Amino acid sequence: MAELGKLRLGVNIDHVATVRNARGGDTPDPLRAARIAQDAGADGITAHLREDRRHISDADIEGLMEVLNVPLNFEMAATSEMQQIALRHKPHAVCIVPEKREERTTEGGLEVAREENKLAHFIAPLREAGCRVSIFIAADMRQVEAAHRIGAQVVELHSGAYCDAYHEGRYDVADAELAKLREMATFGHSLGLEMHVGHGLTYDTVGPVAAFPEVAELNIGHFLIGEAIFLGLAPAMAEMRRLMDEARGAV
Image 1 (tube, rainbow, N blue to C red):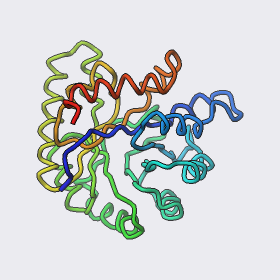
Image 2: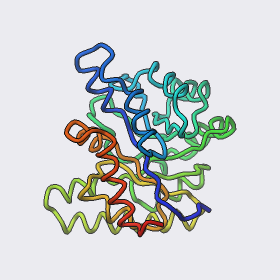
Image 3: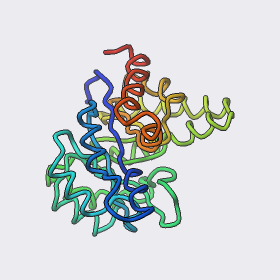
Image 4: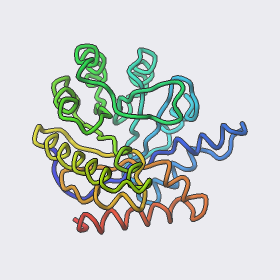
């Protein structure tokens, strides 16, 4: 079972690559962003290599494996191509996410309950290679139970529904979604899963989630990269860390 302690911050650098790819060329460089985040106290770096290579590229993953001193959380779809890439690099962690070509970002969690057998066979070689396997799912008991049954070590709960409702002013819905996240964080932890939360978190929404004692890590990307345009990445991270620690009680 995961030990409770200081809440970790994983920084997703995907959208540095989005800006780079909008114009082409080499700048802004996601590896530079990763190094800055690392130096500013990130506990890990997350990068999603999509099948369509919309933002992060194969070369970015190669570079991250070479330069990082903190763990790389390699987000990927459950495809044979991505499995082979992960097995070649053997990152600290792989996070299996759903992926649709038409979406702008990862919408919703992975459907594990209907694909248990397939996913169990898919993640087995990754675990054998020494990668910590995480499954990105909605805050739903069926999905948490299924993730546990197939042998995932980590579950990352999708916080997008909570964050979207909050920022749209639908506070009753936001409260209900937050309650689901809280319940599933507790339930997953009781099964021995390490519990993470990510997607859509901002300065306004991070506090209540950071306060969940069972959650070991938050993964935040788009908002921090956006704030970095105005503040710089290190100051944007510092404010997020302050809010996380304040909500957690600075364990």
